[in-house]
Amino acid sequence: MLATVPKRPCRACGLGFVPDARNSHHQTCCTRTACVRRRKRARQRLWHRDRYASDASFREAAKSRVRRHRKRASVAQAQGPPTSAAEGRLRQLEHAFLGMAMQMAEESDACQARELMSAWADTGRRGGAGIASGP
Image (cartoon, rainbow, N blue to C red; front, side):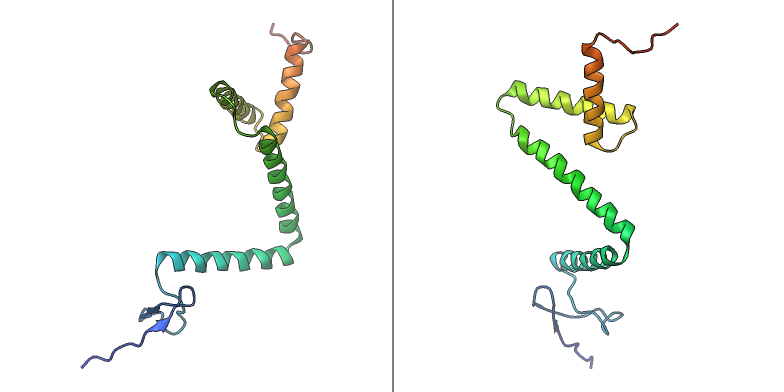
């Protein structure tokens, strides 16, 4: 007669589950998708918190990422949603030109690429003064 394996309560959802035979000595959560995601997110938060606390360069890079994100978000919020179809198309063109400028300048920061596009626009308004011409 086979022995029945007792169910354990999942730490994520509270439902009972039968632990995997190869992992039963330390398995505390079931294999439902929501529980796996919750467990993974908790592990990632713990890793990030520990790394942030112990590594100064990681901490500075994270702060820089947050500053860039907040700057981009404030620009997007200031624009608000498009009020007409024409304005929506104009914004699409702006995004396309921004993407082209980022590729041409090999720039990964959209804020710096916007400043570069602004400088190019100023040069264009001046009639191309200062642009080197071909032979």
